[in-house]
Structure formats: C-alpha cells, structure tokens
Length: 92
Image 1 (tube, helix red, strand yellow):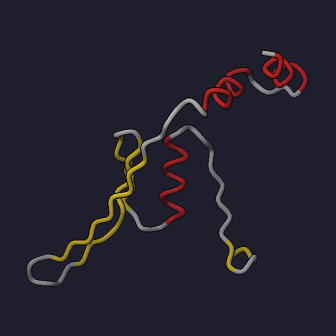
Image 2 (image 1 turned 135 degrees about the vertical axis):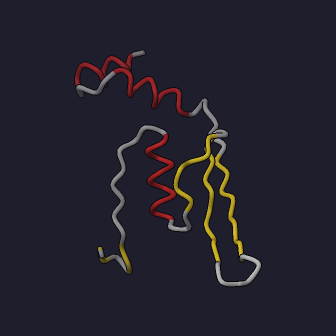
C-alpha cells in the first residue's frame, strides 16, 4: 500500500496505473501467432501473413511485419505505442 501512496502523491502517478502494474504479474496473456500461406488453384495469387490472437480475441491486422504485430497487440492492451526502427543503431 505504501508504494501506491508514494506513486500517487509524490510522483503524481495515477492510482489506477499503479494498480495495473501491481497486478500485471498475476495475469497471463495467451498470445497466438498463427502463420498462414495460401496459393490459389491456378497459381496466380499468393497470400501470407500472421493472424495475432490475444486471450481468444483475433486482432484486425493480419501481417508479417513485426512493427504492426507489436503495435496492434500493445494498443489492444491499452498502451499508446511509439516504435523506433533502427538498422545497426541508426534510425530510419
């Protein structure tokens, strides 16, 4: 309880956020990454990607892009997301 009071009063950190962080370890997220790869019968079409499901909720975007999967998963959990992409330590 003391840590909740410190965060709320001194650090101006909302009590609801402290509660969520405090109880985060008690929850289990079941994340399923289901890859698909489909070729149509005449061979002209090729579709592939990953369907992401969190706790039995299928997310909208089906993609193989790690940035998209992370963004949609974290936003689904209520986070604002800002991902910085780098190659060899340099932003691009």
